[in-house]
Length: 365
Ligand code: ATP
Ligand code: MG
Image (tube, rainbow, N blue to C red; front, side, top):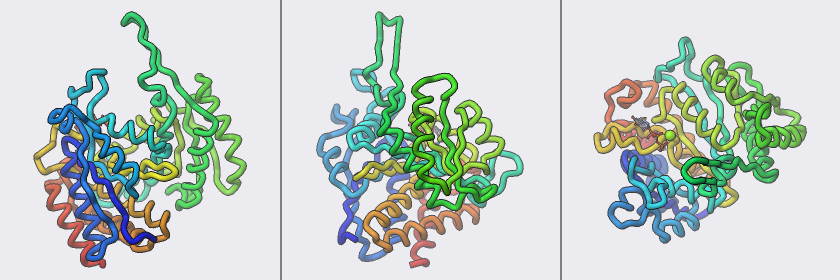
């Protein structure tokens, strides 16, 4: 347990500031007076780049690295790019991932009571799995080192290392062990998702998975090819418990999974390394709805709950774990009671959802 936990808060762009301040308010309400969290705001992102010519100032990076956790809204404005063509704002997320080695991107996909599922006949609780996205290798690791020839040839490289695959696979088994299993049959199951039948790098990913799996005899294992996976996630999502996959495949199926539970606005994300933890919703900065007060804050609120859980177990601090459980309970309740934002076909403003969550949390303390 620590006396004070330093949380680096970066609001970012678009709806980032709206959803990020909502999450901070909710965490404060969950912990009440005497909260051990110290939130400190730092600038980064595309808007900061437009103002200052810098999208990720060094002091912000240093603060992120040395803090106990990083909470982010969302980054990037379409068309705002650095001279080398990379999006200002996206570099915040990518630099943190690679320099802090945040190799495990945990993205829970869970269908809540009160939210309409676009899949016919699927009810709350019947979708509840984790996408574990390898966050430090794959097609993203050699980003920038791709080959461009005369404007006529372009090559990117897919990198998989034994150490990198092994650590993400072990993480997948640990997550499955700690879970309740798949909703359909309660079986604790890790699904290795790849394209091992065509590409060598994915065959390597699968081979390392198969080497590690016998260390976890209590967990069922299976392989599913990425193309088939997109079908299964629509037709039988209740079968899955933990899905482990390469960086870009994880990126793609995260959006698919989010769509099946009502949209990007509900999907949280945690990016973890050995020391650092970075928490932001799975969605982007949604510039189309920025500033209107209608952004869905639940994804960022649930990411903040994941932050409390992670800190709570790392430092054996039940105050934080209890606050995380309360935030999840308040979220369940608010959604079930119909506090739905525009993307969920409701008419609740972000601020009203936030207030409702805070009121419920104050009553739980
Ligand atoms: P990125 O490249 O950062 O992943 P993206 O282009 O994939 O971003 P998002 O910003 O994630 O796009 O969102 C796509 C659309 O989904 C938005 O334009 C918006 O309409 C909707 N959306 C995303 N997040 C939310 C939210 N929190 N609340 C309401 N609508 C949202
Ligand atoms: Mg996206």
